[in-house]
Each structure stands twice: as structure tokens, then as C-alpha cells.
Image (tube, rainbow, N blue to C red):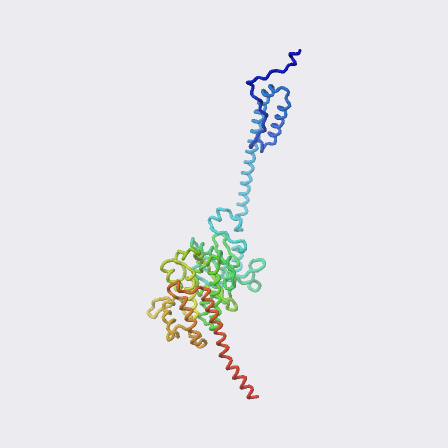
Length: 444
């Protein structure tokens, strides 16, 4: 009896029992059932009176329960995979049914990579059907401009709903439709939107929206009722209005060059200068625009693109582009304003030559300056004003880009020139007014 109550001596070779562990990993996370079973197994193992029995029986049960839990988790994982794949198939069917997202920000990655650029949120995206209705199905009667890029139409929309409207009730807009397609034309279309969306200046044309539906590439501007500068130079503009236009364009270019990363227009010409109802100029057509060189760069190497007659010599020969290329092109525009001649003139022998090359000798010779001045304004401009204006043109057309002034300096010169014109006109009118006053006093 006493022997029965004596404690058994411990076997020194016997290994200590390890406490039961809960299942971990995917099985424990995804199966609540396995957690409950493993917990009950641990409790049962803990409360067992005979440790030897527990060590023999519980491991088998744990293995059994672990296997069943693992199988259950596997079944749940397979079913979840089936549900997710089914949901993807359903979403695919919905996308096919309703078509691809029309908002650029909702485009899939594949489309973004294909297009290469996503329009900003604040640019309005027009439906092709709206622009088609606004232009009366792109009628020939609505064409207001045409060139290598395509055609420009006048259309009418409701400014509140941005839907097509009738001419008597809607707001006029200019709709530029890209005629040709290709990598270069798509890049020009993207450039147009990118730079115009960032520009905010009264002398830069305002971007109203775009359309990229299907194969269509369209840019929508504000409508400029007086058309382009080149057409008015042929018909005739008074001298004061020409100076006003020159200053407005200079302000636009100086603004572009003063950006954090300077913008080079690269296609500055009289046909890209549009006029509103008050003949305020606005620069347009940013398809060839490029960012200028950084502070540690002297130039940007690029393809030679633009219009003959406006190329800066260093850009045409080397492809090296700087902001001074715009200064040269602006000098050609000033020469057009001064002479009312086109940038490419036809010589008497039938050949064509650049207006700038022909005019340079006359600009520096005061005796021959009358050969350049437009006959329509010759009577309204005195010889001193003509010499000052010719000097500004000559500075812009210098062959070495380092010798050309910046657009800020050109703008300051033109504004000073305008002030001198105003003072000169006041001094000219003052004796006439004084003479009339004296005559009226003597008569009375």
C-alpha cells in the first residue's frame, strides 16, 4: 500500500514534453475552424492527468486535425481564387459592353503607354459628335483656316453645357482638325495641348478643349474674329495698330522665355499671330514648341522643324536650338510688319529668297530705308521713328545669336518706342491746337 503511494522516480533519459502549438501561417489565418480545433486540442492536452498518455495520443490527434484544417483552407483558397477570377471575367464583360473609359484619367496603363501622354484634368474633353454638330458636320462654309496640319473650322457651343448650339445663341470657337496622322503629327497634337494648358497669358490663345475619340485628333481654341496678322498686313493696318500688335507678341514670347523651364515656340510667324475684335494679338500653334536648355546647357539639339524664312541661321545649319532662335523669328515678323512683305519674297528673275537676307542691307542704310517701308504707312511715320524701328529689327536679325538681345530687352525697346511715338504726336499736335485757340480768340 505504501509502495503504491510512493512517487515514481524520473527517468533521466526521458525527454521533456513540448506544449502543443497552434497552427500558424495560411491555415491559421484563413480557417476559423482550424483555430477552434487547435485551441481545443491544446486545452485537452493541458488538462490531461497522465502526461504519458497525452504524449501518445494528442500528437496523433493534432496531426489529424492539422491535416483536416489544411485541406479546408486549401478548399477555401481555391474557391476564393475561383470567385476572384469570375469577378474579373464579369468586369471584362461590363467593359466590353459599355466600351473603354472615356475620361483620360481612367484610361488603362496600356492605353496611356500607347498615347504617351494623359491630358490634364482641367482640359475639357469634347465628344466628336458635339464638334461635328457645332460645325454643321464640318461644313466647307465653316472653314476659317487651312494648312499642312489640317483645317480650322468655326463652331458654336453652349458655354454652360459645352454642347453644340446655333450661331445666334452659342459662343464661337475655333476647331482645329488634324488632317494627317503619324508619329510626328501626334507629337505636335500633344505638344499643342501640353504647352497651351500650362500657359496663362493675355497674349497667348486660350485652350478650350480637345477631342481624341477614335482616330480623331482635334484642338479647340477661343475664336479670334479678326483672323491672322498676315492677312491684315496685305489689306493694310495703320502704324499705331502695328506697333500695338508687335508689343503684344513680344510680351507673349518674353513670357514663354521667362518660365521656370523656358519654352521655345519654334514656329513664330505672322500667320500664327491671331487678332481679336480689338486687334489684340494672341500667339497660337504650339505644335513645334520645345523646352529650352537647362542652366548647365548651351542649347538643345533637335530636328530642324519650322517654316522657311523664319529660321535662325545657327538653328538651320546645326540644329542647335536656343531662345535666341525665337528672337530671330520675331525679327522677321517685325520686318513683315514694317514692310508688309511676306517672309519668302519672289525676286525679279523668278527665284525666291528670304525677306530677312534681302532687307538687312537696307535696314542699316538710312538712305535706302524707304525701299522697305510699306507704302500704306509711309506718310504716317517720320524718318526718325523709321530709323529706330529699323534698328530694333536689325538687332533681332543679327547672325550671331550671342549678339541678339533677349526678348525682355526687345520688349523694353518696343515699349519705349511706343512712348516716344505718343510724346512725338503730342508735341506735333500742341502747336496746331495752340494756333486754333489763338485764332478763335482773335475772332471773338
